[in-house]
Amino acid sequence: MKNDIHDLGLVLDSRVKLILIESWDERRVLQTLSGLAVRRGLGMYCWSVSEGLQHLGFGGEALPDSEDPVAALRLVKADRQHHLYVFCDLHAHLADNPLLVRLLKDVALAEELHKPTLVLVSHAFKLPAEVQRLAARFNLALPSEDELLALVREEAQRWSEQNRNARVRTDNRTLQQVVKNLRGLSHAEARALARNLIVDDGAITQDDLPELNRTKFQLLDMEGVLSFESETARFAEVGGLGNLKRWLGERQQAFLQGGMADSPRGMLLVGVQGGGKSLAAKAVAGLWGLPLLRLDFACLYNKFFGETERNLREALKLAEQMAPCVLWMDEIEKGLATGDHDSGVSQRVLGTLLTWMAERKVPVFVVATANAIHKLPPELVRKGRFDELFFVDLPTPAVRGEIFAIHLRRRELDVEAFDLAALSQASDGFSGAEIEQAVVSALYAAQARQVAVDQALLLGELHSSVPLSVLMAEDIQRLRHWAQERCVNAE
Image (cartoon, rainbow, N blue to C red; front, side):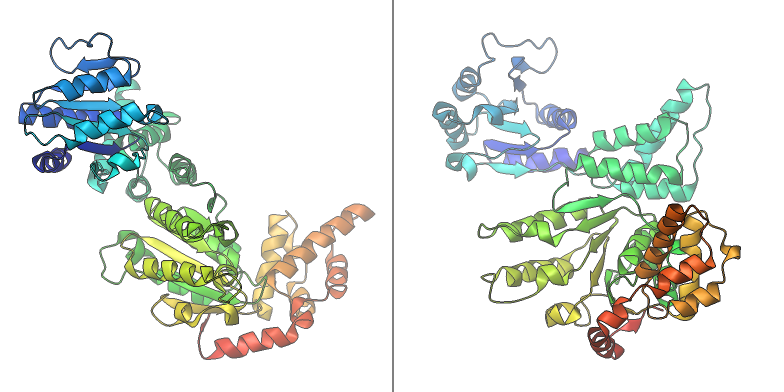
C-alpha cells in the first residue's frame, strides 16, 4: 500500500484534478486514498448514491441533500479548498445526463492549486469523450508473492485460533503453488480464496488446486474466447511420447521457479489427427500443476473491423492474469491460415499473436497443436517462436500396447485377460483415438449381446475399422516428409 500512496501522490503533484481508478477492491482503494489524505493533510469526502457526500474522519457526517450526483458535484465545484473527493460508482449516472458530464468537465478543467481533486472509483468506468483526455488513470498494484504468502499464513493463523490452535495441514510445494496461482487477484479476492481453501477441512492440498484455478478463472470473467479446462490429463494416461515427456520434465522447474533469462515459453505439436496432441497439451498442465486455458480461434472472429484483433488481445491479457498457466491453442492453423478471402484479418491476428509471443514477460507456457502444418504461415513455425517443434506420429507397436492397457483399465476391464501384443499387431496404423474408439465399440457390442468384453470381440472391432492412416495415406506421408528435417520426434 505504501507504494500506491506514493504513486498517487505523484499524480496529485501533476495537478490533475480528475483521477480514475478501476478496481474490484473498493475497500482497499478507500484505505489507500485515506492514507494519502492523512499523509498530505487533506480533507477527504466520499460519495455514494446511498450515503451522499460524507466527510471521512473524526465525527464525519453526511452533507444534507447530497445523494443526488448533480448536487454533490455542484458542492465539489464550489469548494475553494484542496480537498480530496472520492465518488464511488458514478458511472451508472452518466448515461444521457449532459449536466453531470459538464460538471465533471468543470472540475477537471480547474487550474487553481487550491481547487479540489475528484477521484472516480468503480470496477469498470468508461469516461465520456468530453472528459476522457482530462483524466489520469491509476491502477492499484496487485499483491506480490511475498504479500500473498503472508496473506495465506494470516488466514491459516485465523483458522487455527478458531479451532483450538489446530495447525493447518499443508506442504511447502503445495503452498508455493497456491501462492503462484493467486497471482493476478486483488488482496480481497486472494484472501477470500485462501480462506475458502482452508475453512472446509483445515488443510491445503494438491486436491484444492483445480478448484482454486476454476474460481480464479470465474473471478476474472474469462468466459468466451478463452475456456477453462478443468480435466487435465496426467502423463501416466498418455501412451508413448517419451521424448516429449523427458523434454518437459527437464524444463518443469525452470518454468515454475522463474528467474531465468531464457525461461521456457512454449512448444508446437504437429502430427496425425487423433495421435494424442490434445491429450499431451492437457497433460502439460496436469504434470506442472497449472491451470489450463484453451483459446478457441473460432470465437475470435468478428465481422466488424478490428474486433477480431481486439478479442485476441483481450484473451491474451486475461491469460497473463491467470499466469502461471498453460495456454493451449488447439488446431492453430484454423485461425491463422492466410489468404485473401478474409480482407487481411488473418494477417492482423498473426501479427498480434507474434508480437505478444515475442514481448510477453509473464509465465504463460504456450502449447499449440496443428494437423495441417502446410497451412501455417512460415513466420510462426520458424525457430525462436517456440522452444521446440515436436512431431507426433502414429504410435509404435509398444505404445499401442500401452494405449490399450490405459483404456482397458479406465473402463475397469482386467488387462491381464487380454493379449496386448496381439491387439497391438491388429491395430497397426491406428491412432490413439482410434484405439480408444475400438475399446468403446467393443463395450457397446458386448452390452448389446449381453456378454463380457474379450479378446475376440475387441479384435473383431479392430478388423472392421479402417484407420485414418489408410484413408489419408498420402496426406500423412507428406506430413511425415515435412516433419523429418524440421521437427523433433515426440516418441
